[in-house]
Length: 260
Ligand code: NAD
Image (cartoon, rainbow, N blue to C red; front, side, top):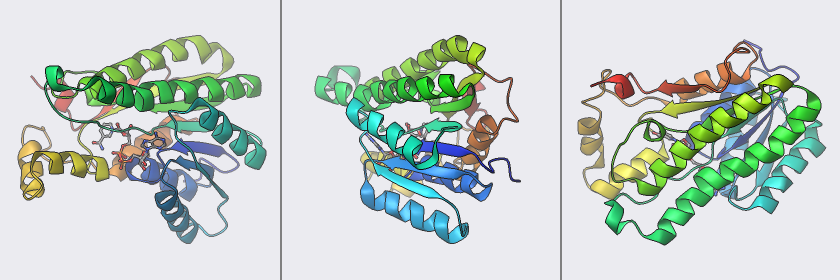
């Protein structure tokens, strides 16, 4: 497929997991990609991977912390300077934060997780939506979570941030549909990325793989999702093929969030 020829896609959290997989997918379909992450080394690895797989692909890397509005302004401006427009935006960078009871969840941790996952995503929306409104087109995918549509437990900051991001998605989708812009969210379940590995290691550093297998047993499909499966959904939502899907929150979780 070549759905992204002549299109520019901006991706945050592009150094790892879902962001890297989405970048690889849209680049393989012809996109010019602007890759943002706070971790410069992992960004460089993503760029190398994409350039190796797609000779001639145009890439830009911007090291930025999405929780800092000036740095968000910078990654948007740098993308425009390099490529002149933003057709697709995968607003994806996020952290999981600690796992414990609400009463033990430190307020500094709460602020940190909200600062990245919610406020950081809001900054991204603000600055990219302004560009897309002037262009008269664009598609955005925010990375929410099953933890943004269901109660999971032991995730005060994460849950609040992802529920908030679902609200932002619906609000902006309703506002910007009239300008030819789609704003959607995905709600992934457990997808095996470095984030999930880290969270399993928090539970048991020595037996995290076994814990992982137990963890996915209640899932109707009895497995973790793969980053490439999420990337395929993101690419569809950004491609123009999904042009009448707006303000939606799409679960990608093997059916777990519908299970009683
Ligand atoms: P990951 O840890 O593999 O990748 C996240 C990337 O975001 C990393 O490269 C990290 O450096 C970057 N990042 C973190 N904070 C940042 C900041 N302040 N500024 C810039 N970059 C920052 O994790 P992942 O699993 O790929 O997660 C991506 C998104 O998907 C997150 O928003 C996460 O909450 C969400 N998500 C993941 C899962 C899952 O099971 N993996 C499920 C639901 C939602």
